[in-house]
Length: 430
Image (cartoon, rainbow, N blue to C red; front, side, top):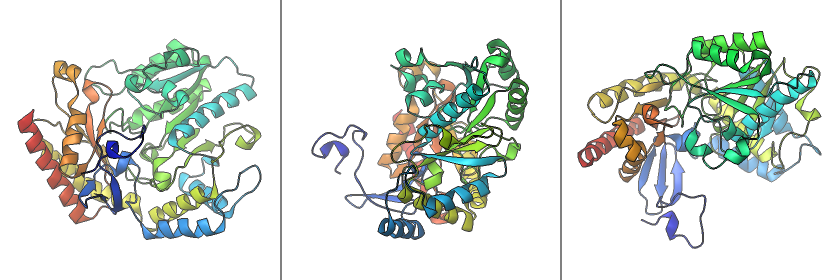
């Protein structure tokens, strides 16, 4: 099998030893030798529609024949206008504007900048604190990492982050709890000084940091109250959870909470093109729009990307993929629980829709010597299954199982068969 390091020249952004992808269809990826891999994590939890959807490919080709690039300062495009209208339709009446960027990380950066602009426009320049939960992960850019409770990915950036806005990670006091509860958030507001809090950034349901642990509806509702009482803005990181992944269009919808700013990304394009966005709530920057400030990058909101995202959104809506994620996700969760019950390596799964985390059982001392989750994912790949390692500490170590929302019954059976084989062989070798 040829691998990435066999290619001529450097490949600095490609993990060493990975197979070379040659083709992908549905929930399967094929390497150069024709071996198939079940995409059990939708890449890094982004390929919601699966690979090679004809309707999306047709839309990409059609737009490429018309115009591939037009900068937002010089031209508008119909596909971008249509996408904006349809994103706002699924987001609900709480949002009035969509700011396009190229990734989820940039969407978080944009939300933070909008929050600080909002307070500055009100003359509230003393707000320099951002509250974020630990563990959490909000992206790989410096600002997004700055508000992430993910020590491993923040490593080496202290000189930059130490001079930025004060980020306060809110941790659970109960050792048995994965995420902070209402009391911890109330204490954090009190200790920071409510009048100094600019924003709260939280994932309704986490991925890389928490292994699909969810922030409870009670916590989200209390955060809304605390933000209303203090004047802070509530920023929800929906980059991973939105566009059907968790069984709703957005992961926070079951809580009924209104967000001031929402970051979206992965599912917006299902991995067919780089695009992200920040949804702006009505109370943010009243009387102003993001266009009044310098937001976005050269490629932000380019028509090829917005046309692709529009096709993805319409496919998601027309095939009611959020409902399908709920239905198939129930079956997957039940079958994963049965598998975990038979494996000493795994705890009971947690998750919702088609986003599930399988906690990896490992003694704390052994974890310090090297976590099992990444090794388990490598073993799964050897068995023709792609899954994703998660967790920032011993308590949150997990393997994410998050297949495309379009996965067929046969593909789901094969996913679980390959996972069970992996656990059996890996368990005997540990």
